[in-house]
Every structure is written in structure tokens, then in C-alpha cells.
Image (cartoon, rainbow, N blue to C red):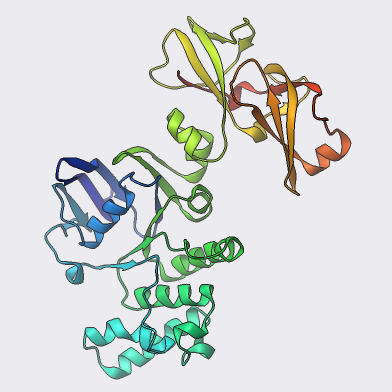
Length: 353
């Protein structure tokens, strides 16, 4: 078994009596784009700050290439942190901002100039090297902040909500730009975000955090398609939850309609349980392993698709069905219409009630 590039081992963090990080252990690979995903207060930012050296560990250890960095100060670690605010110096040019960290290390001027020029080419901002930050767009400032962090050639780059200050369209563009730069530089990226879509698009692997602890770690596909808990299923994307009952090894709706499933989570006992299915896995009409009747209460048009809100007896909330535009063109239900929803056993997950 090969040694992990970065190992977080049984790390705890207390703030007085509050446990912000609870016995977290993670192995992160070299050149991996890793995302720490969670809501506010989940402990993800505290964990990132411990990696950077801005918070001390209450317990556990952090190792890079087998050597502990827990006792090292931030400037001694082969790690750099890119803040959400970018924190560019307004009185300096783009080139000067990028060069600042190298100048603090007292590198030769020729080397600084070479490295700054090279990274300006990579981020495609050489033509703006003499501009000040207030003369740049949001996306350009983001790239300058990234270049300033990368020019020091850290082994690990930490990103704290790196795209949070950008508008939706620019954020989508910069997601792909960050992935491109990460592959080009071959540096391990560890990103903190509360944005599920951002994590799914950018990360090679995702760790979901809740109340300071790790809930699940896996690839975006694993996290989305095979959630390990009801919380993870609800937190990533949109999920429908239906009330069912277990009797022996079988599941059924309260009125006795059988529910076929391929995924039953640990802890599901006899009696009440929850069946979960994604909106895009539901379809209107017969044909699936499972089916339920309901009445269309709302229709939300999203351009590429429609979201049908369907009232059923299996949930207090409407069941959401994603219908693609081409399917809707041929068969679009109306509000108030009674329809049958179907789905397959392979798309059904059962969680404890």
C-alpha cells in the first residue's frame, strides 16, 4: 500500500467546550482536487485553517509525505492558502501582487521576474501585468490571487470558498478554469465549499462534513448516486423522500404497495423507513419496478427541463419530477392532472426513518 501524500489523523479541535472538529481522519492523494463540503458550522473551514497552520490541533496529527507539520508555523509549511476575499494589495500592480510572496522569501530578482512572467502566461493575464486590482474584473482578480498562491510552488494549495465572490455565470466559467490550472500545475488542491454543484463539478473526491465529523468520502458520482445517509442524500442535489414500512426483508407503502430497492442503509429496522429517489430517476407513466399515483400541483419551467411538483400520499412535501424539454414537448402534464410516477429498484435508497 502506497503512503498517502497528505494524512489527517484523528484530528480534533475544541473552542472552549465546543468541539468544532471531531476525530477526522483523511488520506488525500498527490495532485488530487479534494473538496470539503458542508453547511456553515460543519467544521470544514476550521479543518482548512488547521492544515494552513492558523489553528492549533487539540488532538491528532497532520502529515505531508510522512512528516508531521502540526508543530510548524504557517510560513514553514509547504502549503499556501487562497482566501475568499482574494486580499490583493490595491496599490500594487498585478505583477507586483504576484511577486510579493517571492520577495518576502528574498529570492533573486531574476528568478522572481521569470516565475512571475511564466505564471502570468499560464493564467493568460500577461497583457494586464501593469494594471491595479481595481482595474480588473472579478474573474481576473480571482486568477491573480490564484497565481500569487501558486507562484510560490506549494505542495498543497488550500482554497477557502474560492468562487464565492463571483456571480453565477462567472463562477461556472472559473470552475473549469481552476480545474485546468490544477491539472497544469499538478498541485494538490483542497477546497472548502458549501456549494454542492461546485464540489461535484470540480473535485476528484468529496468529503461531506456535519457537526465537525466526516459523514462520507467518495467521488462525485459515488456521493451523488450512493449517499451513505439521509443527510448526505438531502444535502447533495435534490432528493425525494417517501414514507415506507419494512416487514422482514420487504418494503411497502403504507397502503401495501410493494417498493423494490437495491440499496438499504445500515440501521434500517422493522417498521417505518424512508425511501429516497432522485427527481431525474422518476418518469411519468408505467414501466418501472415501483409506481405511485399523485396529482400535479405545480410546474416550474427551467428552460432545459421542467420540474413537476406532484402531491402523493407518501410524503408531506410534493414529489419533484425532472422532465426533459423533449419529453415535455410530447407529453406535458397539466396542473391538477392525476398521473402515475414510476422508477426502478436500482434508483431506490432506503434510510432509517
